Image 1: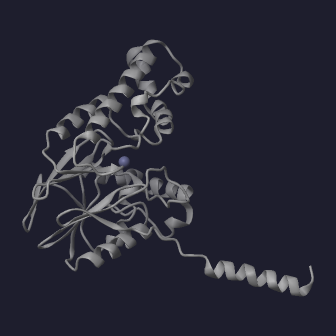
Image 2 (image 1 turned 45 degrees about the vertical axis):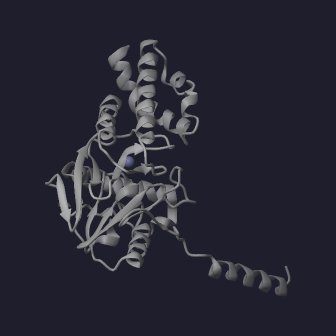
Image 3 (image 1 turned 90 degrees about the vertical axis):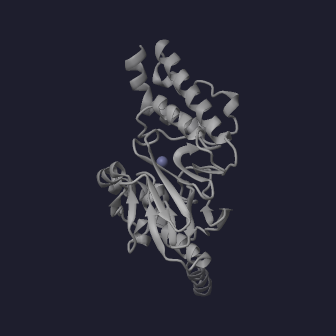
Length: 307
Ligand SMILES: [Zn+2]
């Protein structure tokens, strides 16, 4: 290569690195009810492309301050979320909640480190135990999006079943189907139900820490008794009806029945992961991927109980 060509190539390369766009989640707050917004995640698994933004987070503006529900998968996400909230309201952020200990729901905590962050007591101990490992794993999965992110624990634990903030009364409901400690928040004023990962909709549910499919299914029945107007699932589109809960019940039933039948028939794990997934769930993203993972998580337990 002659000197001129080398110079031009060098200039091109340096231009490229200078003009590379900084990573951004481009978070857009979507209003879902009076005083209530969400940031909608993608129906995907963690990747370098989505930076871990596969989760629904949200916030409620009350007369006396803002309540933030989950902080996303990274410091960068938390910062962008906070900036977006501050563009909508000048009320101070009063409460931040982590609904459960999964990385996409709490790794933005550092962006709210000047505010009390609340979780259920068990969630806090789960985070103390697994938080750092989750953060490390996220660095492997999504790379540079995670820069400077560290697992920051909640500063407070929830010791009440309700919270009155201005004219909003928030019911704080402990469930356990998804991770053993799952916070569901219901705003009685607006009828918005932040269902956390107790509800996945149009995206297959994940099971690495579930205490059991049957227990989860029973708790979905309890959620059905809540007279909500809008349901915000932890993953997937929001809904004004019971469709997400019906899908959860049907999917959990199918999972349970499939694993029981497979264990009774003595199928190996390799055979189970290839079983057909009911057409009923054709619209659910990542169903094969998550089914394979669920078999790995739960099938040994079914074999013990039913074979
Ligand atoms: Zn989760």
